[in-house]
Amino acid sequence: MPEGHVIHRLARQLTGHFAGRVVQVSSPQGRFAAAAAQLDGRRIDSADAWGKHLFIHFDTPSPESIVHIHLGLIGKVTFEAPAEQWGQIRLHIATDEIAANLRGPQWCRLITAGEQADAIAALGADPLREEADWAEVSTRVGRSKRSIASLLMDQKYYAGVGNIYRAEVLFRQRINPLTPGANLQPEQLKAIAKDLRQLMREGERHGWIDTVLPEHTPEAMRRPAREDAHGGEVYVYRRAGQECLVCGHPVASGPMEGRNLFWCPSCQS
Image 1 (cartoon, rainbow, N blue to C red):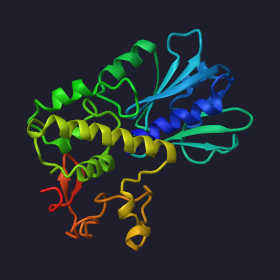
Image 2 (image 1 turned 90 degrees about the vertical axis):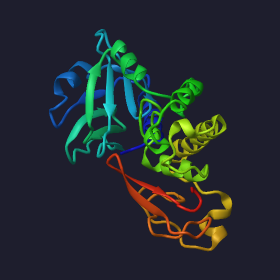
Image 3 (image 1 turned 45 degrees about the vertical axis):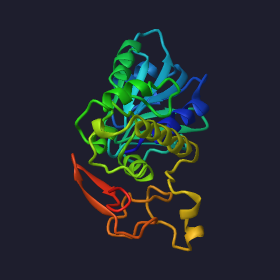
Image 4 (image 1 turned 60 degrees about the horizontal axis):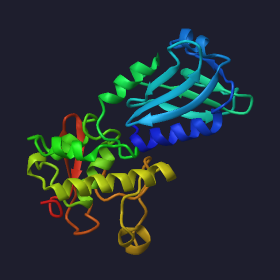
């Protein structure tokens, strides 16, 4: 599932390509056809992101003027030539020069500003938004008996954080992923928030996740670069059984709430 940096990057790209422009909107697949007809020939004002939720704002006379997208596990937005029609396109937004095509989302809905506010209110702190209330989140985490690994994946606490950032931040902070939130010190929770902000900003800027320090890059360690569809260099994510880049101990993995958890039993003891 795309993590928050991907959604924020998409919002920035959509705004750059389409803000202030009248667009052609359709649903070649047909599942968004009625809503697309309401938006066809209207102007896009902007796009923004909260956690893993993407919102595209149209200038329409109707109260339902916002397209709310959640990509889910397999959804993608790709920028292509306007004539591209391959695959099952749920939403097609185009000018004469470029198109944004949405395929395979968990949902694509036409909503009101009030419904957007309700969706945002259900989310926790987004590391990529300046208004994130980290004090409030830290207070809630500090009262919880759930593991920090579980809490980091809960969008009501940390909006936009997914499996990769969870594993990597906990490694970088040398925190055992099974530690209850209530057992963490306030300084540790502040460090988690600071690290998430830094890493996800870099991810949004570059389009991939890179979490290793300069001394652990392939060049510095004279090791092969990582080959993975997610790109970038990481410490533990999808490195089960391989040597930890810091201590050499085999990286461990195990299921947690339907997702694979990765950690170093030595560095994060």
